[in-house]
Amino acid sequence: MLTIGRICGAMQLKDYFQPFAHLLIHEPGKVEPLAYVENGYWLGRKEWKTKHGPAICTWMLYRPISITDALLPDGKRGNVQNIWTSKGWRRQDPAKGYIWGKVDISESDAIFNDHQEDFKRAFITEILGSPNLEADLRESEMMLQLIQDDRYAFALNFCFYNTNFIHEQSGQTWKCSMRQAGAIVAELRGLGESYLDFYSTPSPYGRDDKAHREVLMALQMLGWSPCPS
Image: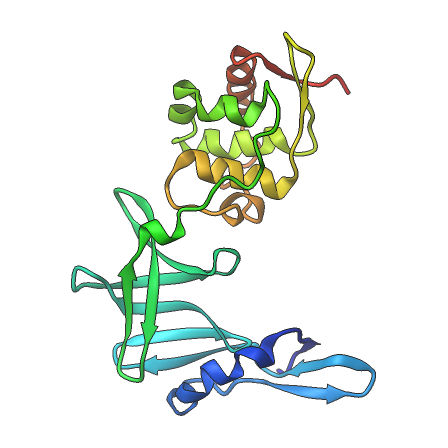
């Protein structure tokens, strides 16, 4: 069944996709110009696949978003994904979380090369003034250890949602956006995650009241409590 939706920016990527058009497994959709819409509309399939030797690349609106059976640095094959907000690719490593890198896509293969240092990003929120909850979290070995557990990572992310915190000693307040909350948790964990792993991903544990309470207690030990509503 055909789908139709607004298109923005896809045509800038068409030239990147074009050399691989003959490798299509699925026929892509296309942009239909409309006089009353600046960028036109996308008509048809929004995702399609191309085969590059043993690797299969999935595209969305001319952008490569994932590759199955990409060639990895150790000579094995595995799956890699493109994280749009970070302009980079990553693969999952059981021992290290996610490893960031770059992908070279050719007609005969798709090769992933580790470039972890290139994708180490600074914290999204700036550390301004003192005291500052984010700065205190960075310095807390207790909290850094606690949120290595996924349950507590999602709980900390949830604690930040639409909540202002107050520093009990100074009265200084602190808050962040939902995107910033996900970015802070991802950066603190140091596993190569992005804010999307928390901001747009529902907790697989649902609302974990026990983890939520323990995280709030840990924040209070750092001198921070939710502002009274």
